[in-house]
Length: 330
Figure 1 (cartoon, helix red, strand yellow):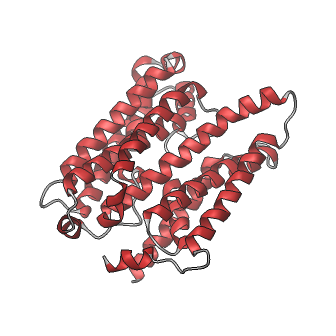
Figure 2 (cartoon, helix red, strand yellow):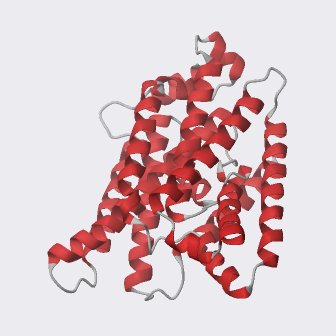
């Protein structure tokens, strides 16, 4: 507990580094929100703010769910280069979309009730993740390496099935499917915001009740148990919450692999410590700046010449490679 206790001790009489970082990020997030809502606005403000406000809520929700799920997944896995998405859970989303087009046709994908599709995708992704986490994290002899291996194998298996079905599709159906498989921050189904916020809020309330265990869990299983944490129950609660948050963000905008790793790694680098009361808000604020600010720049400056998801995935993948190389060099 020495490391955590030392990190909690802030210098008296002045702002600490985490407080300054969070304050600056809060200002940048507010500027991003203001730019997104006002730049290039034409027409009545009542319409502009309502239309853009709904998209803003979706971007903020995605930033929150991905940032929180990534931080907590790295906490329970005790590894800073892993994210829930990289374990192959997004492959289920691809498989579901491909199966709908393959067996039922593109009209079914286009005309299906968005609420039913959303709930089905959330249930499938959450169920798979919960079973996998329970199997690999709670066993006495289960290891992180086995988790990575099984996650990769399942991801390859699901993607192989999806690829096989995609190769059989006619070109028109394949084109429709491709549009549904890439993350899109421009055309979000705003009617799903209510149920998305409800699920994210419920998960957040449950996780808040055990937030005092987050820093202790970073010390490892044996240390956490010796300090009185009900390790199996705490880990399964966190992992179930992670599964729901990832499923919500994926079903809402599509699969995003490296965005969480990007914002969490930047948050840790800026803060200089790993306390969850600092990392969680900093990662969420960075996510808001990246998504809301980035989307505002792409829409108003570059006129939709590129997709934000492509830039985010490129930068996140670059950060992932840097972390791997730095870890291998140590």
